[in-house]
Amino acid sequence: MDAPTRARVMHPLIASDRIEGTLVCRQDGAQIGTIERLMINKVSGQVAYAVVNCSEYPAVRKMRVPLRWDGLHYDRRRGAYLVDLTDEEIRRAPTGEGGFDWGDRNEVAHIRSYRPPSFWRS
Amino acid sequence: MDAPTRARVMHPLIASDRIEGTLVCRQDGAQIGTIERLMINKVSGQVAYAVVNCSEYPAVRKMRVPLRWDGLHYDRRRGAYLVDLTDEEIRRAPTGEGGFDWGDRNEVAHIRSYRPPSFWRS
Image (cartoon, rainbow over all chains, first blue to last red; front, side, top):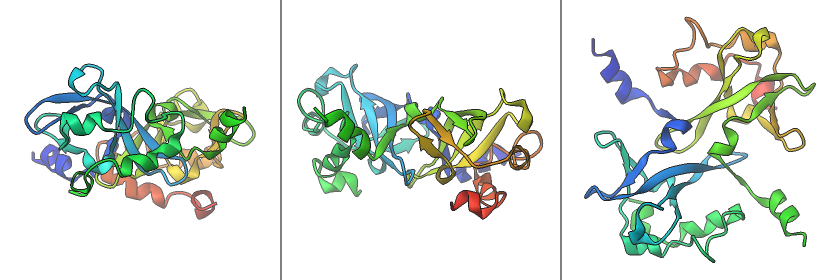
């Protein structure tokens, strides 16, 4: 009866509505927010970034932050996505009041440069 | 003041929660169902397929059907995704009772072959 275990290891896919609402944490357990939605390229179907709602984490002084998909690492034990970002790095994200234009989705290009490459390419 | 118009044309991205719940129709207007969720590759962030709920469209005799992302074409005027599939083609989809195993997400490989190439590559 090892089918459930095997299945868990092998499934390469996850449902969008299972991602939405999932916690985003640091390695030390600090909760940064929850995934509100994914922004998806209409033609290619590639996830460009996740919109993380940080409204219950005052330290970062942002309502929402865009995080690149490949910077989110799912931790099955915690049931959360882990990110390796400091509060200061999140505060510098091009979002919120007067910064990132959520309406202009071309702004996704900007989030590729505002973080240390080590985060995006770790 | 042509900014809103320009923005509409240029945005390459769409939000996952805006896709979920969107109608799926045929060119003739017949409503096949609504998009329930997207199945996304955990590592690459690529949408593998959309799960379409057909429970209100008895002709296809399916509760859910997997449709490839590149087979869904958004029609802004109707606010719906258009597909070019007959009821018979949808009935032959590897889903539903005793067919497609939604738990085993590796089954995504199967949906690549069950339709005429003209649909997937039009």
